Length: 246
Ligand SMILES: C[S@@+](CC[C@H](N)C(=O)[O-])C[C@H]1O[C@@H](n2cnc3c(N)ncnc32)[C@H](O)[C@@H]1O
Ligand SMILES: *[C@@H]1O[C@H](CO)[C@@H](O)[C@H](O)[C@H]1NC(C)=O
Ligand SMILES: *[C@@H]1O[C@H](CO)[C@@H](O)[C@H](O)[C@H]1NC(C)=O
Image 1 (spheres, rainbow, N blue to C red):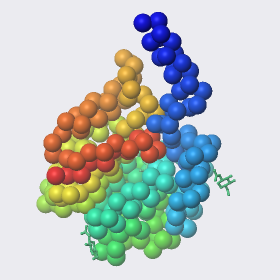
Image 2 (image 1 turned 120 degrees about the vertical axis):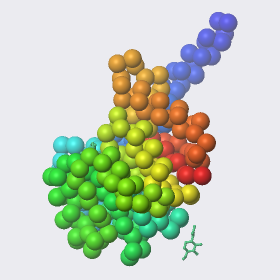
Image 3 (image 1 turned 90 degrees about the vertical axis):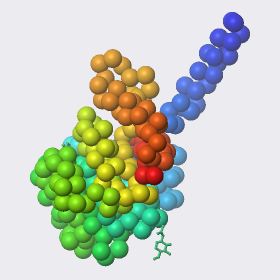
Image 4 (image 1 turned 180 degrees about the vertical axis):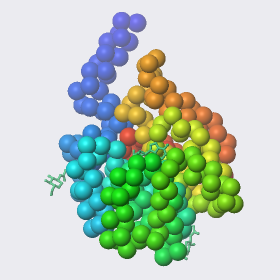
């Protein structure tokens, strides 16, 4: 018994010293994980950022809430997934200044369309300048209102089962509602990507007063059992779930 505890302690200390335990929460290249040499290596050797996306990222970094912005390496992954499934219809739930909305629009062919949900008009106004500069403003349909209302409107308009890709990245307390509505809106083989599913590691044994971590943990556990989807949880950024509709 004593020997077991010693091994346990040694492993624990090794994990602390080597930072192996942190590798699951690698963070974003523009915040959190910024100083991480491995993440820097990944970005240095794989990021292919459109010049207007670079401009939008730099402009957004001037904002106090820039940590909300999706990581460039994560947006690129999602753009590649859209290309992989020949996506032409996407929804962005929580667009902020539009980095990912623009990235998705750029990944799509001429007939592509991104419905972007956002409540804060000042963020939208920043994004629109860059959508125009990239020449894709007609591909991005921004709806400035509660995202849940936009999703309901799309369903009422007969667009259920027609979307290829949804990115869920707005208020966490509505995540389960967003997931259920997204599942209605996407086609078979379509992808729902869900951001912040690790919440900085908070989802591992969430504290009793940490409602956000509890909400995300409950959703993660629900999806694990959900037979309507294929599932992967990636340690990209703050944790990214990929759910593919069966
Ligand atoms: C994490 S940020 C999104 C980042 C964005 N996906 C990107 O590419 O950088 C979340 C955004 O959701 C917006 N938001 C919060 N609650 C919302 C709601 N109920 N409906 C629509 N947008 C909402 C916030 O104003 C904020 O801009
Ligand atoms: C990444 O590129 C930057 C800028 O060129 C350089 O300063 C940094 O050392 C590189 N880091 C790695 C790990 O490749
Ligand atoms: C996507 O489109 C290309 C070219 O039109 C086609 O060759 C490919 O099979 C399509 N892929 C999917 C997953 O539909």
